[in-house]
Length: 225
Image (cartoon, rainbow, N blue to C red; front, side, top):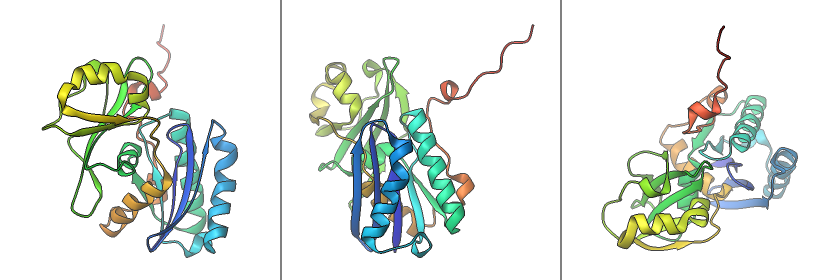
């Protein structure tokens, strides 16, 4: 099985080719996602010795995260998938973050601005894949829901920004938290491969961002007078 995977939900712009478990990846930090994403796709495909039409699907980080970054990722995924007649596999960017943390239980958080975090609770299954416990939400750090049990690992930009508030809220539920953890395309590919095999691929037009904070992402119509 062969997948192209990408994630642009955070300051990390990441692209990978996953071919039967072997991975070629590029990751760059910054805000030049729109300029760098396609050259990075070309680089990893060339290194893997593959063309787009030799792939089985394209997996992408569908969010939550930066609104601009998510639109870039979804747009590039749609364009490539339409051009190569490939299905797409949407993967949570929070799940990809958790997948890359060496821990069985992860509290994944991105900084959502506005004194809030995008929050997801993940536990690793027998196949080594992170599964969501409950739902992904946007919430103030002081109000995050209490997870079951103890021994949780915190990770993501939300922890970098709000570690004090989150640690105070969660108390002894938290074992520790990891600094500067970002979602990577290689982990989008791992989760995407499993989702593809489970029949969860969708047509290219369904490669859509998931903002979680939808009311902010949608531009409201001006009030009539």
